[in-house]
Length: 269
Image 1: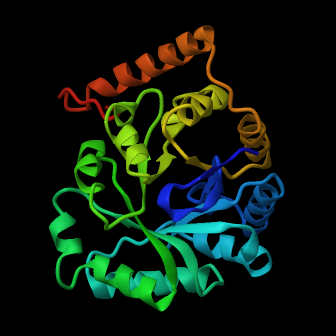
Image 2 (image 1 turned 60 degrees about the vertical axis):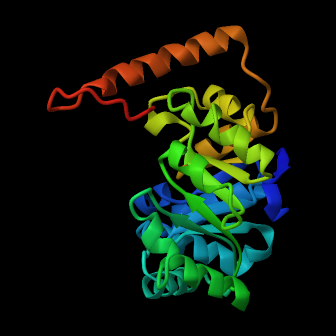
């Protein structure tokens, strides 16, 4: 498994991270087996949220035995200080821990003034950092242009953004800027909502840009095995592979260009 430093956090993270959403669809026993196998193969970054069904609870079963083997990044969605504080508390309880490495603030341009202002969620993050409950504060958004505008300050040490061969806007400005600022960059939705059907090619594309790690949703042992094998040798795409991946990306974009109402949309850009 290849490891990289997650920007100014200084955390040495596996390039393959574990995305916790899909394990809510499997049994507790199956989920525990998947998370354990991810650890066995060197995955040391786990992402979840109290809003992901029973994902945090299932991961917490593993954390009871293997907490020291990984870094936890947890999305905390409350907008007010009180809401964020309560959700963080619930996350810690579910995860069987009193401390997480990264708390992620999910926000968009409209909500940003509220969450960063007096009584906003960011205040709860700052207090938790002072208390030693969290080490670092990150930000996550689906809007790469918005993230480009807000990461230049000192409020955040890392970010999560959708990035794949079809949704590749972040590679133009956001990811190079994050690298320049030593801002840890975490990619999500790396398989294009499942549309990019060759995981190896899709992940290698992401890892060969300014990305430190990619959190990939996995709920089967076979998925862990396959993706970990790719993370052991994340070589750049060949010209032929680029053509294959571009063809799939073009099909995805075309399929999503017209919404059910007939209005033009391009959710991957």
